[in-house]
Image (cartoon, rainbow, N blue to C red; front, side, top):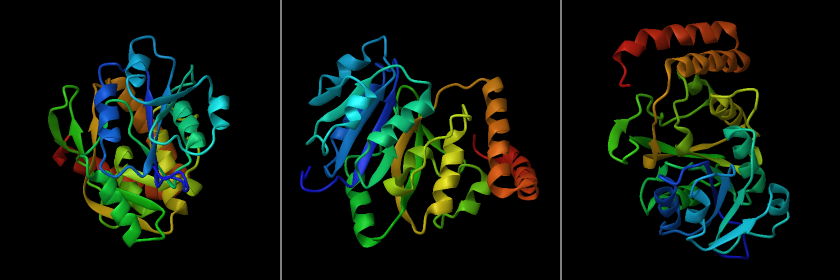
Length: 266
């Protein structure tokens, strides 16, 4: 990294008891051909070998979030990390947002991966060709826990992205959207499952220019989810949609989603 300027991207990984998956996630970040990024890992005080894996790479550990907030500029290619209890995923993501010093923030959580070693270069090229740009986004591919390819999401990111695109649900995979730090809000901790949807709505309400990469830029790992969790997620998304778009638009959007659901790829 060039210590004379802030990095283009802050890549943030949230992890907890993820020793099975973290190494591949980290290497997908650290092996990028373009090094114009900093790498932050926010660990929730893992009880397995997660932190041992982090320490296999050049790293700068801070004893607490408060201590990490006092650090100087990005740490010259080292992994900057903390390991302490948190209030859940979105609380940890807020810590990552507050620690980030890059122009853009990008969440690649444990188990997820940057698509390939040239992806950061594609992001840098897209930004250079489209300055100013508030959001950079692309497509995603789903992987299983063994990293085999499961397929594409049934929600494909549109080439023209606006806030109203989100009436169709979270059409941009959270692992495939980079947001300018200055417009990135905190995650609302009242939402336990769908705060990423609320966050993306807020981002696109502020964004003046969204820049599309017509490529996969992330692989995201899916794990099993109970029917009870699905119901909670639907309820949260309904509340969020109602807040951002109003009741009539929300009801109409849900009717369309329900009508399409039997014909979409799961």
